[in-house]
Image 1 (tube, rainbow, N blue to C red):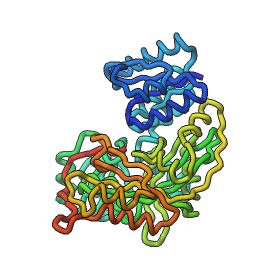
Image 2 (cartoon, rainbow, N blue to C red):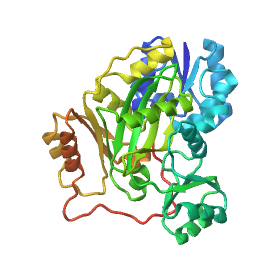
Image 3 (tube, rainbow, N blue to C red):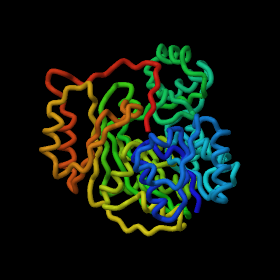
Image 4 (tube, one colour):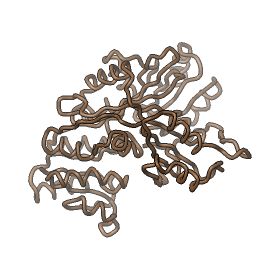
Length: 404
């Protein structure tokens, strides 16, 4: 089996997907923009061959790389990156080389938030009132129905890139004066706790693996207010969340893919659909899958692609949590104190690449326990700010920052 993997070097821990594909017997054919001699050894070892392109946004160069691989290895069976940023590129290459997977005709369902809303409604999942607005008057008409605050975000944006909360007519006018020249969706602001339904669907669309997470706040707040964040897995998925999640898998026709579906839980306990990401959850969440359940999700995914099926017997034994810190904040407990005090719970300390640090912090602690009270206590100590400094809240501005 010939599997082309785009950008095998970034994020670094994603080389584990390639490693397990190779162990499962596939030819793993990498394409990236880093010189071969600069690739980390673990990335090199996980690949059958590597093809360097000057610019990964150059679709013709990607096509030439795939042509080279086809000539040398035969028909390409899969083209993957597992990265939301490259969804369009993946679909285009699958079109051109007749490769199994999501094609260009489907890609807007996974990229455009307006299309996501349509799919949520098809799935009978409540979603926030909103639509694409192309003029100030159009926006005012919507706000007359929803009231303030509203949230403005690119219809085809990635994560929290260019996402703003608008609290007044003055902010709405300012936004339209300086917004990027792309389609924006405007929707009512929903107050609630963010939950996600996450996992891996098999070839029939059934969850081969599923779990749920809840978040201290949204990525928009984390980025725009320069805050640290925490999120943790649940041992038991709320029944209503699982019902909505499974409906979405059918509505979005998810096959042989990871999924990350976000919801708000509002005051009455019900769930409202936010958006979907048909790739692994960002950051180090795939590692958290493994720590929470004592599994290897990288191996499971590889077996699914190479063999068409995979067996996974698992139990959600632990709550697994990610809690970040930002370098510019003065924390009450030192890094060494946290490591010494909670060494029996901490399973990984992650150094976050700079491009992700606005959302995921500069350092992330991953820890687990079967007891939620342990998770709460450790998170509180990691995030405790020195009494002389309060967590900053910078003014909102028209500036976008990406998340993963």
